[in-house]
Length: 318
Ligand code: FAD
Ligand code: EPU
Image (tube, rainbow, N blue to C red; front, side, top):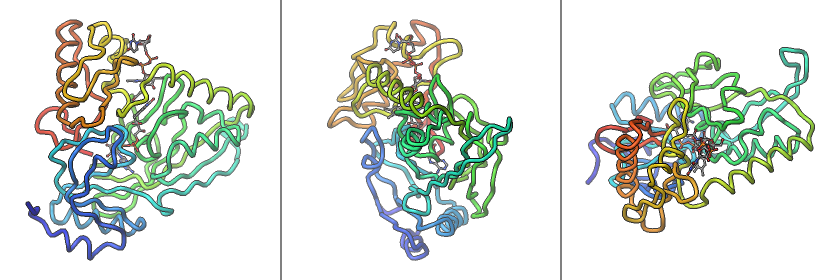
């Protein structure tokens, strides 16, 4: 069925690529989910602004997808536009040493929102950037990580973020200092519909061999404690003072299966989508885990994964 808005007008307007009915399973780490009515890869910031203005003017829903490592897309897909940033205009990495607040040298970085976090970890290793080691093993793009304030017990984006460069829903540009981004545990508060196009970071230096050893340690720990299958990391946020994984494990839910989706036997806060799984399998499993943990522990687990295109609770705006 064709949508109630003019997709060919968008394709004509933009210099970047516009793919119609693009399956989002190809663009998420769960590897499940239906199509976007239009999947847009803008050529540059001006092209992105034109896309956002188009959507705002016509009331077309618009979301932005990074590497899709924290998103569950419904099997029926999502209406409107899904913007995906890529290419040199959004994947640059500029790094220069400079004085920090306490006079010690720090590295100032400006990175495109589409830059994979792995590139920052590689830089941390080669340049001895102690401030970035916590990123080791976190999948995703710089923009997605900033939006989620991604992190581990060793640190989070908020620790190193100086500012975000945004394109707002009306196509205008804004630079927001980190203290105005509303960063909290796996959350941020950005203007509605804002797309991050670049992030400025500040990272302390350390001894290169210590930095490399820390990165290797974090990667090894992750390999030992987290599953390798198709997932979107931890499904739920940790509740205050506790660990969702431990609660799910204690409730005896490891291995619980719906269709081809399973609560990981390695880490109970991961759901692994095996070959042939549907988004509905994953969503039903999320629901069952929430209900069981509420019944057994009296704790309401809040999803960290964003659910796109589902009706009712848990729907992420994106
Ligand atoms: P997406 O999943 O594509 O998007 C996430 C959110 O960010 C969405 O709301 C999206 O709209 C928004 N977004 C994406 N790009 C932009 C942009 N340019 N502008 C504005 N909004 C944007 N997370 C952790 O915090 N710590 C971990 O240790 C961790 N481990 C993981 C391990 C595995 C195996 C996996 C699969 C995931 C893990 N995650 C972890 C979750 C995920 O990797 C992070 O949330 C990640 O940083 C999301 O980045 P992304 O580019 O994939 O964003
Ligand atoms: N645990 C269990 N059973 C399990 C899993 C964990 O009992 O199946 C226990 C562990 O033994 C440990 C405690 O729970 O005592 C915490 O486990 P872990 O160290 O793995 O940390 P976590 O709180 O489960 C958090 C983040 C991860 C991040 C790790 C490493 C959240 C929701 N999760 O996991 O982030 O990688 O710390 O620092 O904050 C993500 O956000 O997607 C994510 C994977």
